[in-house]
Image (cartoon, rainbow, N blue to C red):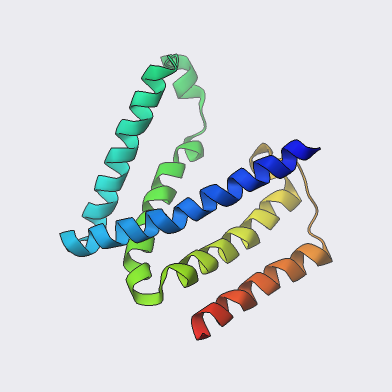
Length: 149
């Protein structure tokens, strides 16, 4: 039972790292005068980090048959990541880190609730409830308050 709370705390800390990442990438984009070059550098460093991690833990490479059996849509995560990181680099100087992350989390919660409700992508079903809807609305109101003040 406590494991869920520990894991939620870890997720909270990782979420904090996104604020740092967005700020760093935004500053890099300003120095390079290109949000896309900054995103490319960020992904390149991340790719090298993941390569080293996979070598360190001795991850077995998938064979051709396994790779060809993977549905194409499962490869879209990298594209979505590139859109998110590039957009954060562009938007953070204009609207601030808190507003950018708050709004993106609001969007995530809306889509996540739909995914949970229907069990898309093989996730466990968690029905949309009045409490979840109110929570999302409060989050969105919070974003507007952050932007206003």
